[in-house]
Image (cartoon, rainbow, N blue to C red; front, side, top):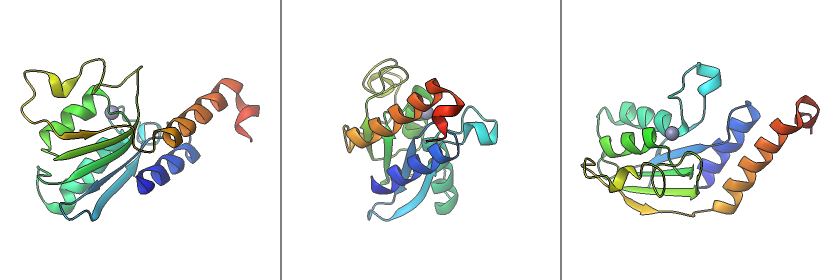
Length: 151
Ligand SMILES: [Zn+2]
């Protein structure tokens, strides 16, 4: 989760919502890492999880990440949860809960849906306090306007 938090901090520095993700292979070795890049790439699907999954699939030359684990600083949204299921990721570790946009423990609850064909093992609340602090600092900065961002 330390690498995911690093990616989240780097995303904040780029002006992106601070979320970071890492894919580790079955032996625990990190094979892909990413932070949000929706603004930079003009792409609403460029969430940290999506980018990390794409990079991990490219690295393994496979459309599936069987046996792999995903670490992400925030509860995945429904889009990312679906991608995690399609990728056959074995274990999902996430940090902060996301009552507004999360799709795992609330909202769409993608993995509990009868149409979900693969459910990862779930581990929530990992380093949640630090992930939440990053997000609240980021959004507080946005509310304060340009002057607040100089800090
Ligand atoms: Zn997402």
